[in-house]
Length: 391
Image 1 (cartoon, one colour):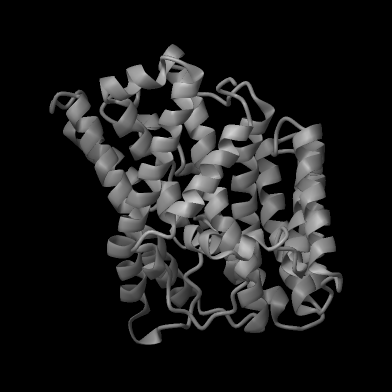
Image 2: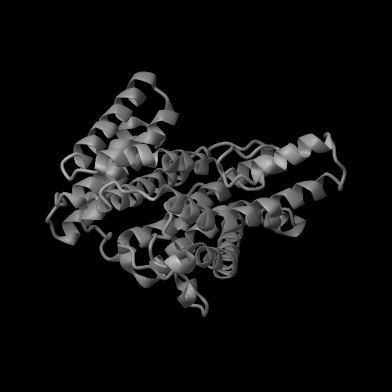
């Protein structure tokens, strides 16, 4: 067994599923009358945990060398990147489906209000804790002008619209949140584009061709430029195409078992053939896997099991809090010394990190995230779907 062995990941996930039977997890979730796809609810928890495991493995080399970079393991690189890609697909699917159902009549102000109250409470809590830690690491002393420091705080508190910036000249400030906030920039770009996109959903015959053209255009630009950044937009477009295919009645009418085999086959092919998820051909395979998921694949019933649904409900808190939990535990000298003694010890430490993260995320979900969503709904409870693709 080494740090980069694959099987410990599945042991950790199985134990975390058992953890969801503890009291309190049955209270997780939101009241919503919006259309839900249980397999998507189930997959979101594992996507967030996939990113957390990815960053936990990165910590192994980060502690040794101080360098934060993708791990020298195809599986542990992909487990993070594929999870992010799937989050973007879920965003594209959920919001394009909502626009298609409303025939392009988008209440943009209401959408932005819903997004603010869905994302801001947990985000601001995580960033506030990060700012406090960074200031404490600086010895409570400002190393830069106060005006510059305040601008850094404002930028970092902007709910991910702007990139998280290092603070107070502290070199480790970017890693305290494990860098997870970068994905929110792309989520916000998609939200801001929705009013323009909605124009093409006002006629039943136009939304599917538009989604397909958007996907093909994004793919072509990504292929011609070789830019991994442009591939990120392909993921959103894949979600849009799946939503339009569903609305047009073009889902596959195959047994769930067959759909699950097809979905799993796409994922296995990616792991065996590619070292990065941010490639056009990987985006196509992931898009197919997502289409199979929407058509009814549930990975042999796994994704609709109660533990998976419960983990999915707290996935945004898991995603946002992972860096803080990693930092807090590995900052403790006894914990770090134990983890670095052997590869087995490191995986025991990772399990401790993941258990702590899930329990902390549950508390944040119940006492910060859900009250924030309920506050944002006001008298309009159930009119917008709180299930965020950004976890």
